[in-house]
Image (tube, rainbow, N blue to C red; front, side):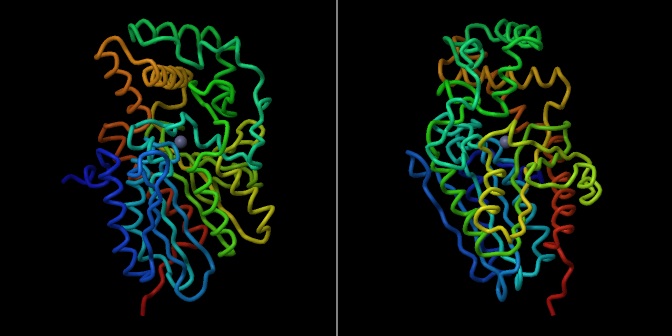
Length: 379
Ligand SMILES: [Zn+2]
């Protein structure tokens, strides 16, 4: 097995099995560590797996990793978790530090190489603070752009449809179609259940499950350090840290503090229902004295150019159309699935290598600065 094969698994079951094996490594330092498995959705074999242990003598802080919120993106997240378990546990003091590692928040999506849940929901737009408050008016009406959001018949000729989408979107740079989809990407849309970037009409099981863990950690530890692993956004083959505006520090200041090159802030005004904002909100309202560091870490694929952005939207739209309506030609189906993987779980060795290298950079930068990694003596 090559190094790449060791970390990057071919399917959900292999990835989960590898994750479950980490519990024995973790038990060497945290003897009480427990693996728990929770079924999510219809298929009892789709599970969120969590390895958790409190600190041995004093619950001063906890390191919290989450992966697979966006299904297919969980493969890279699982690789990073594997790397962390192998390379960094020796630098953590189990006496004072708890550990909580989560595999596949959206197991159906990961198993089926989709980004959304089995209800077509983008989980990171589903963490609205008040249940039942899913705001219909969170977006303006997208009905003008409905043809861009939701599928209308099977894929007939992918090359042609791709060109049309590129044209519609690029001409629409100044028109509604483009700004509509760009807005929906950030805010989610709550109008078309079969459309792209759908935020859902009620809370997803995965979201309830993660919220319970967020609350538990915030009320058990005075310091919670959370890294949520994703793919696609940011410069190709580089890691980008994405933080909520609840974190009041300036981007430039954070770049210096953490020694990270790529940091993006997002504002709750432009992004709705995401799990990091929710985490900060719970902290502020229920555990105001707890220190919370929570950020997304993205491994870039297509890049940040305008062309890359068009390619992203086109890929997301075509994959959604394929899922709901199918394709007339088998080769078109293959092409779309391949392009979707290129966006969220590329097969290229160069990308996979960069995930490992950039993950080390992010782990060392953040967890050293946050005092999770300390070269302590075991004697
Ligand atoms: Zn993601």
